[in-house]
Image 1 (cartoon, rainbow, N blue to C red):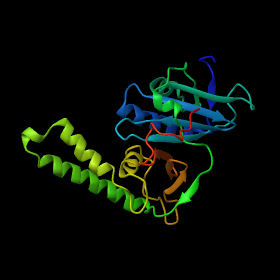
Image 2: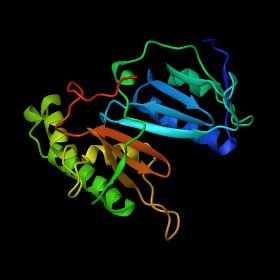
Image 3: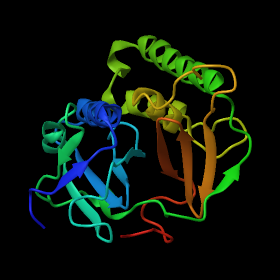
Image 4: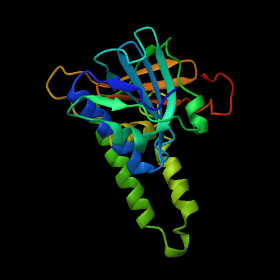
Length: 232
């Protein structure tokens, strides 16, 4: 693979959305890598913001199959920073950087198919309020700690307790919703009747899908070290 492959994005809006997504990933990890998978006129960009222990997925529409031809596919892990620098919003294009040695998560992706709807997910406004309440609780509880108890271990313990709670009657942890909000995937519907987030499952994976991107996470009883991984 060369470092000069070019992705022709559908329009400037797609380029701007890709830029925003990469910028947010880099906000959490300046050395972030992303895995790119392109087939036909769709590009999936996978990233893992380290604070949330989830996979974030942004799908970008392409104007035409990437330049190796309509029957070719692209599957490569690259530097998020280099990809961001290569995006040309005016030309609605992006150059594919040279491949990098991917982090462990890049070899463990959610399945491509077999997703089925899961009931019980509240609407976007309720999810947003849930995250706000969790953030407020974390701040309140940590501020109440005596100075000698305000250690990193104790802060992490409180954080794990709060963010590991399940959303309603689902198996989706609140941290997945927090990640969606932090990456700007979770936004109030623009108008009545607009698409609300939806929850899907496939095997050990859950996927929170919004109009702006998806968050994928493995169920609590199926950690990354267990069987059933989709390794590609």
